[in-house]
Length: 121
Image 1 (cartoon, helix red, strand yellow):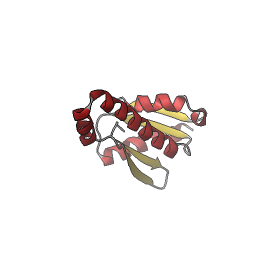
Image 2 (cartoon, rainbow, N blue to C red):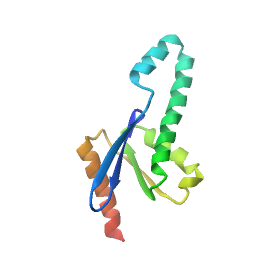
Image 3 (cartoon, rainbow, N blue to C red):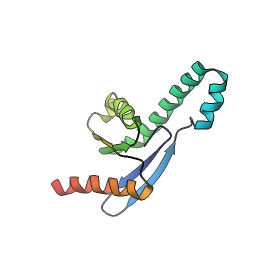
Image 4 (cartoon, one colour):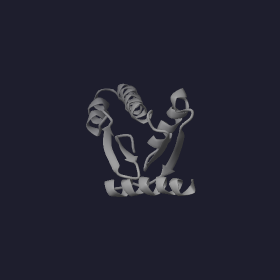
């Protein structure tokens, strides 16, 4: 995940399912707003980033174990929001550093992460 999009990869022993959630605050939106007013751009970016993170939280609430990974600090920012939300107090949430990965690499990352957990139990 990063500030622009997040890939949800559901891991099970039978299959892997993936969907993508995109932020509404695109690079083009940033350029357009920046031309008007830097303060307005910053406010709009923060508002849309919070909307983006809230949409991710909504999608994550049904999972008991979550791993957040990616090349930016977006994963840590989202983790901070999740830890403040009572709905996530009993969930296992891990944050892992990872560079920019292809879709196949992301699926392998998730498979490897959760396969190790299954072996330990």
